[in-house]
Image 1 (cartoon, helix red, strand yellow):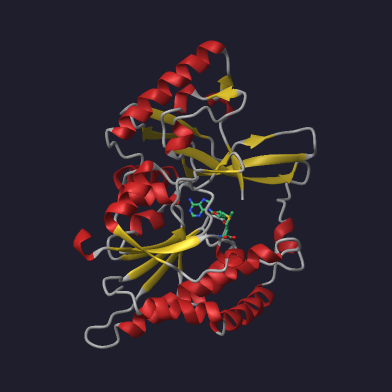
Image 2 (cartoon, rainbow, N blue to C red; image 1 turned 120 degrees about the horizontal axis):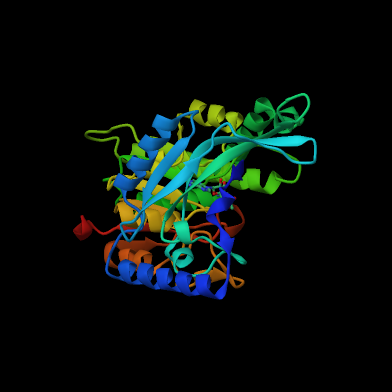
Length: 354
Ligand SMILES: C[S@@+](CC[C@H](N)C(=O)[O-])C[C@H]1O[C@@H](n2cnc3c(N)ncnc32)[C@H](O)[C@@H]1O
């Protein structure tokens, strides 16, 4: 997926603007410490409603910042950006991006400064696509690649599922699920499981994605079987990842997993939800912490370590995430394989925390 950002929001960083940025950072830090949420379902609904009203059209999306200021993002759907290369870029629909507390309280753009949006935890980007300047033919190179083929991906997913279901790890996971009280879970919402599409060079990523979706299917089946006595109900399974292509969507739907557009997955999450998330490129933990108290989560282990190799993690823990985990959740060791799932753990909400 390619994205376009309105560069007019950025200005060159000079001493006066650095000073301004650091004032904004301080203001955000103190609002955050006083308990102000970075993310709310109301805000997500408000942005989503504006996206729907604008569909295919140009206009503005208004976002309320943490300090109450309303910020305007200009939406240029349909605009064409020319270049010297024979290719032009067409600006597509707006989409929502999220900024962690760490990004909001530090100078993140190397040489540019964004005073207009510096206190927004929600940023609006736009999707973009490319076409030949002369023929106006859209660049569909992905679809024309030999590996972009549903049957090949489906076969590989079936084989991987088989392998996963027979693995010691899956057996160990089932034992953990058996011995843990998960009776209040009615649905699973999984974020960032990635695309399963097979393409040269992304075999490892596709394999991880297939295992992560396989784990979702295993959990759904186990939860359903556990509650088969008494009033059993279907456990619904939802997934959100902007990287899904048509092949992913079709395979997932055939497995009765429903793909949701960003940000609808967040709106689904409630206190009867199990949230899954594996190495996302978005601050999923900070968003979930602000908007709900899910029944359980399997996500990257919560640590004090917000950086990796000196670089801020894309889903960094925060004081608020750590506080939620220590107050409301029990950590259950999850028999994971780091190569397939990253360093994850199962967190189950304590009974008394309801
Ligand atoms: C580093 S990849 C990890 C993919 C896979 N989970 C893995 O472990 O290999 C990060 C993923 O986060 C997804 N992502 C980014 N923003 C997201 C959002 N708002 N909601 C859900 N997924 C998102 C990306 O599309 C991408 O698939």
